[in-house]
Image 1: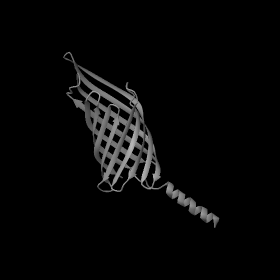
Image 2: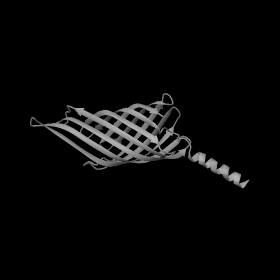
Image 3: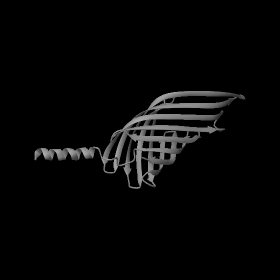
Image 4: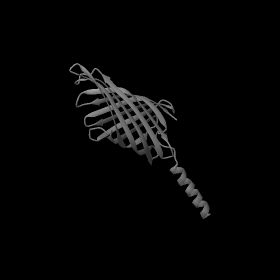
Length: 202
């Protein structure tokens, strides 16, 4: 009898530990993205691709590609600028409740900047790239047809600027089990961004 009771207890604990995530992790998303630099009143716009997949019940991988640009700006001599950023992260989710997940992830970041500037009627082209890191933590809650969450990210893109601390919110509206609308907003001391897009959950 004791062996049977122990077996039932272990089976129950195992089922709880491998429970399906309360919020959406397995998904890909394509979004419109806008970066705004408040101190120089300058914006870059473009697109972002995000993909997340669970490796185990708790361990997951995330990839993100962002491409933003602007042309004919009025903020100084720059005429064209293109920024590309790639992140590859490994994360772990924690179950806080039946409908709530917390998560933490560490990632590698690569950012490249190509620009064309006009100085004294001479066009100069510039290209540079840097490697850095990202540490991100957050909490997501499942409200049913809607999921919402908050997050904080410490980002070092490897450039000359100091490390950034970004705080944000995100949301997911489920039209069906597979197709969702997604949105995200993040802010730093002199920078903010938003993403609006569509997602496929698998």
